[in-house]
Amino acid sequence: MIIIIPTCQRGELLERTLQCLVDADRPDTLKRVFVVENGKKEQAETKIERFRSVLPLEYRYTPEGSKSAALNLVLEECSGEFVVFFDDDVRIDPACVRAYADAAKDKTGGEFYAGKCNVDYDVAPPEWLKDYLPYSAKGWSYGDEIRELKEPLALGFNWAAFADDLKRAGNFNANIGPGRLISVGEETDLQKIMFSQGVKGIYLPAGLVWHHVPEERCSLAWTLERNRRMGLLVGRKLAHGPVPERLGKAVVALGKIASLRVLNLLGRLFLSDSRRFHYQQRHHWNLGVWQGQQTVQGK
Image 1 (cartoon, rainbow, N blue to C red):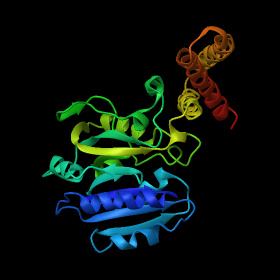
Image 2 (image 1 turned 90 degrees about the vertical axis):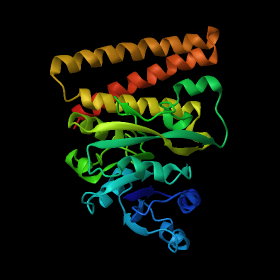
Image 3 (image 1 turned 60 degrees about the vertical axis):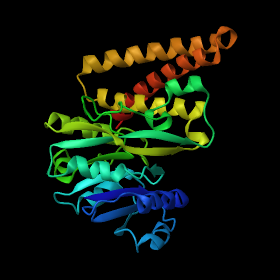
Image 4 (image 1 turned 45 degrees about the vertical axis):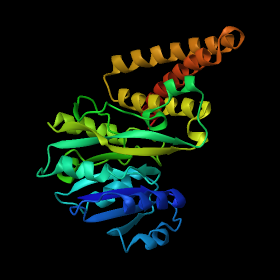
């Protein structure tokens, strides 16, 4: 069993995450904890030094500012290991690591695991806005019992899989994810491929973390921009489809962009903030779909 923690310019939060591992119920099967710095160096290698006496730490670095590239760097070294993924901004429940280890006991593949997520807000967003936030910014639970997943719901900062299954699925797409124009979706795409290859998804309620959410990552502007980028991902995929389907989707997206823009302008006069935001996020998603298709076609 190994743990991989990608990190990029979040030294204090990284130290908090590592302290959680120090305080955790760690199984004897945990052999290595990789901290993988990517992009600009910010002394992550120095910050982990004080934990080396209690954790089996290894440092890796890639100048490529990409979480996916950082994860793939370590996966290239793996052969058959059970891999747990945490981000550098999570607070890990003491029982979390043990829950993953117990789930994978006596197994060599064929399953991936999704842990539960709560959030640590710097400043909590309005309650109505939470309906539009991703699970990473509002928390996620699939219940209180271990159960099989039918969808790719494991969050990238708290999940686990076997290295051989990950490699068979092609590892992480280095063109998407944090550090890229399309900063979401890398773990979801990988889980979809694993599902198609017969790998089962399992939800572990005891695999609990709290995700740190700063104020700027649960704001109205951030939520709209994230929605546009989600549409961008869809648009890029549509751009590779048959021409009639591609053109039809583009026309529909353009029509929605125009109508929703008008509705947003009129909405300033008679819509509540929450209702107007509903139309704004639909506008941004369709804008992303359109832009994604144009980006690919323009190459």
